[in-house]
Length: 411
Image (tube, rainbow, N blue to C red; front, side, top):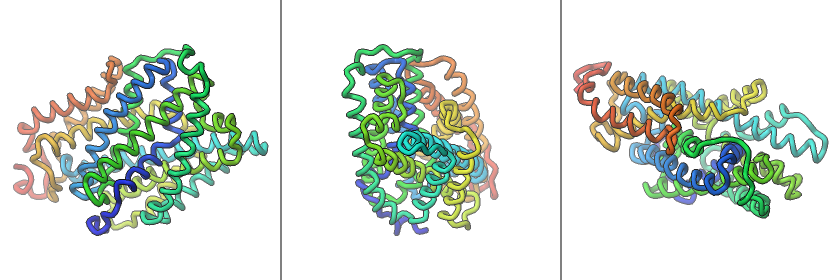
């Protein structure tokens, strides 16, 4: 596909895409985890954490805009061809995992509604239906989802208004002291990690930007506004009703059948991005395959996992994503924006051992920093330290590369 010819996504398209992606059950449920620190502190953590996380997310998107490269393929700049293969496998695994998490979470919420409305209780059926709709979303392609996303996001915006009304009309929201224990640093981390979970795929979409500012402003505003809003709704629901599940809130608002449709729609618009990008990532290893067909297969695998495995408990899953991809993109962003020596793909570079070693050090640091519970979380200090280590060591390790022709890339 010629990315230059297909660079036709506008600012509003990016806003709709990422606003729709952020309106999800996963975002609401994660916001509900912040309830132990109370509404005021939770709101502060949401805004600070999302400002940090979304800014880092957009930096990854800028590389896609400038180089017209998918996210994982851009890692070849720092890590080489074989390095990108490793990250492709890891990214496909986490995207399939997210697909399964979103499908089962959506299916459980829908099932809760149908049990009350029609006494129909079958999570498997709803998982299969949601999975089929996700695959359909992939089939219609980029031109199709540009149009459908406008309709979907308009409907999802109504959802946010309804959920907000249910949560904020309760006067106990600002006075109730929630149960449980959580530090402010942990709350920040749970906010930073969510936007960073999109980092390995944002460039899959920003590479189609008409203009640089369209991709940057549209993506930042869409995700930041939508995700913060979802977190606040989940936080408020967990404090007031001790249940952040959106199905319960919508039933309380007497939405009935409408609630069912809204939950299915929000799950599809978010999970489509995971399945589609899993297909795009897989093409980094086998580029001759059809992008859309592979994405459909990935959606099918995610659906099967959702049906067979109880994967909806994903807090540790978020930490695992942060541990792998935060130091990975710390190295790439440092290479691209600070060192500026390697800004293009080097066809002969197979693996950069120096960058790989720094990445592994970053993973080790992440799990150590989680124990310390810093007030700004673990991801930010790990990315900063990983970046500093790479800045200080890249000259020394500049020859630690395995290439097809050493004289072409090991300078």
